[in-house]
Amino acid sequence: MASGKYKDKTDVGEHVRKLKEGLNDLQGKTQALKNAIGKKARDLAKAALKDVIKDVKGHVKDLVQKPPAKSGD
Figure 1 (cartoon, rainbow, N blue to C red):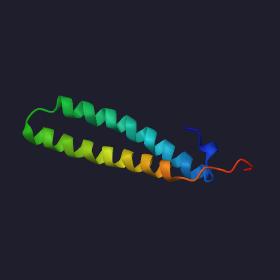
Figure 2 (cartoon, rainbow, N blue to C red):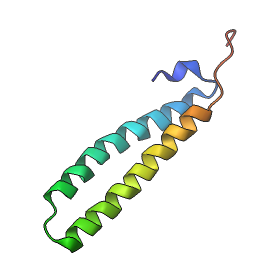
Figure 3 (cartoon, one colour):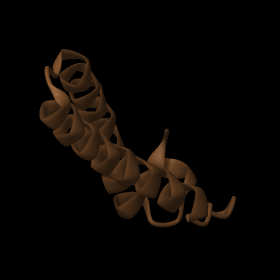
Figure 4 (cartoon, rainbow, N blue to C red):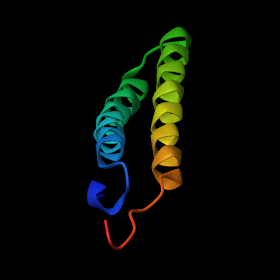
């Protein structure tokens, strides 16, 4: 995603960076859930995964709501 398409390039760039980090974290948490042994470990892994998913969705939502730059900008 190119931050040059938006008015506030710095803010959008930060959201994109955090989104990429969140997606990498999502992969790790998904693997942790697969490797969890026992109900307690699975519940903890699911909670961590749920938090990461919520964070990623928040960044996606924020990016969708950012106003695009005008063609003259």
